Length: 268
Image (cartoon, rainbow, N blue to C red; front, side, top):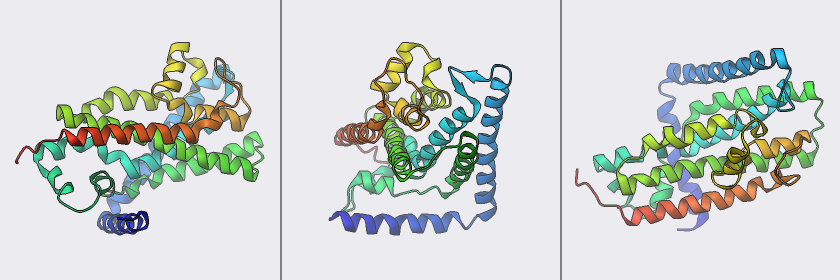
């Protein structure tokens, strides 16, 4: 099947999923409100933390808000595309994963297109609002080049976070369990992105740069846009964020397909 046909099929599948979700409009709206409230609470926590000291690792409150908004924006897209991967073990245990293998399309693509969580637009509303507010406070000059770099960085962040979700889901092919690993790996890694890596020990910084590269989700790109220093790392390392995202996701896809070869139906 050609790439264009895959795109056409993907949009047909997600459009059906979106229509199904919009049948429950109250729940849809309340989830958006809940997400905005949750992220606003995190922002308030940052303000309380910096009220007395003004800076955290040379990052001001508004710079940290910018850092946080970049992470939230890419995570919102990641949830839409890949969040349901963490529940792959349920499909394997129930035997319902077999249906993704009997149709003439790529099983990975089919599983990815199975769900499109539109309620994550709450994260877009929050992050865009923060971008506008912080841009005025920091007097950021949004040139075409900076805007394009931010877009590519968000894409890189989506691929990095999505790649980790894919790797976590792939573990189910070997262990029939995967969601527990989300709380062990993904949840702590995402929490690290709420704050600048400079405040963490050097070992943690290197781990999030070269092992699970969550530093490229928001810290390194934000440092470029805000012209902040990144101790222990080359200057402007953030420019590699899109490339790191592509490489990391390619590795994740390879691991997932490798696990797929070991899949054995439960017969349920």
